[in-house]
Image (cartoon, rainbow, N blue to C red; front, side, top):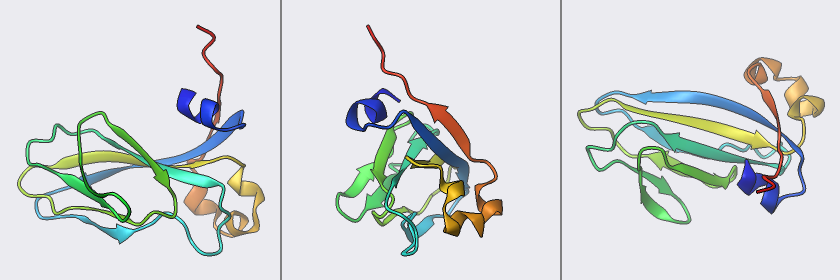
Length: 130
């Protein structure tokens, strides 16, 4: 929250999050979180929940393969294509999210796709005074 508050003028963000479970030999295909008809005011993040015992990486178009370290949060543009590499023998857990700087429910695209945004959470950002 501090990073978002210091880098932006936003006092409130809306977050849509979900968890990913990858079993043996599963992956997450190359994708980005944006669509051409979406506004440009959101970004994405992922958090690696599993201990990385198998050299898991996420491929980001601009940065290449980035090692998945447990507890690490990667913030990225919603437009940046990325993919999770093939899982091998151990179940791999992560949490992903889209972070919006404006309430997406007010936009036409989202009004037509409300089911997709039913778990949207509003978060107030405050700067740490210490």
